[in-house]
Image (tube, rainbow, N blue to C red; front, side):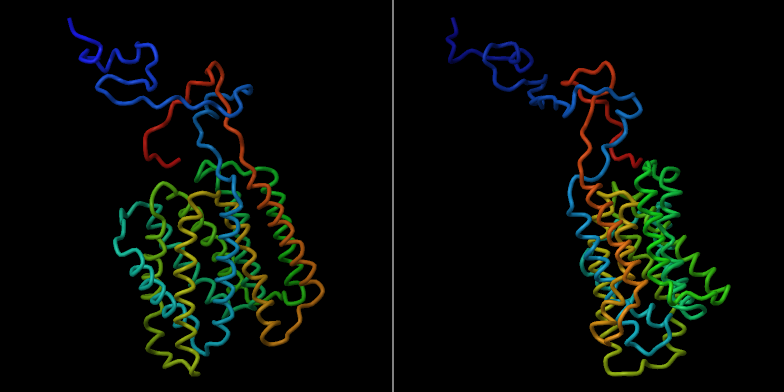
Length: 353
């Protein structure tokens, strides 16, 4: 008669033994204990239960986006220091950024999906439209009209990403747009109709770029930036040769720094956009044009007007309030008829909603 020491225990009956510490599935695989709902007392509809948990829960993505806005504002300062055709500057900067990104990532995950290709083209078109708009209309008009992007993101988010835009998102968007008008009130003019149209188009493409990047939240969004940088290089390549060499000893180092800053910003952005909604990302990035006058004041001593200060305060306050609100984690709740120990059924693995 076998002793307890020599007794053979089948894996599929081990779970029935008293004192068995870990449940065992047939074949010997350990079964993970079911996760409990954080708020089992509140019911959801089945559709809400199957929806992914909303992003948020940390201020880290907001702070990283603020750092990206800081890097982009430095690019604006360097552009003013380079005396060269804007498309040639954009081409050179994009070449440095693409080279830096390729060195950092080495192996690309190119799948040529429509979000990846769409992100590449909208990135490139944003760069080109904005640069040309700056030549045809005032800088204030170009910046203000490009940063109508949050409006387009709010309008398209649910249709394109199935991300609900709340009333507070709309309130923050309108407050930011009002602050932008006040910020540039002293400099706004009718300008050139063609330049204003291109500036609005740059806002549309910038919004679409954010949406396409967010659409790749389950994959690797950075390839869109690399492909878009390559497209921008080829668009500006003729002017690189036709415009002649840039004037000034600082021009080449400035363009190299611009490219490196762009590469660093998009390394961070491609990670952050996977964890934050598109509307939240674009509302934080709108702080970038506010930092340009700060650098102009610190370096050139040009003081902003009173309306600029009021508009800047409105924008910063709106974005800060929206950022703090988005950092609150929304508790996970159970669908009707589901016990706290039973997890909601999951969709297909890797599916992008």
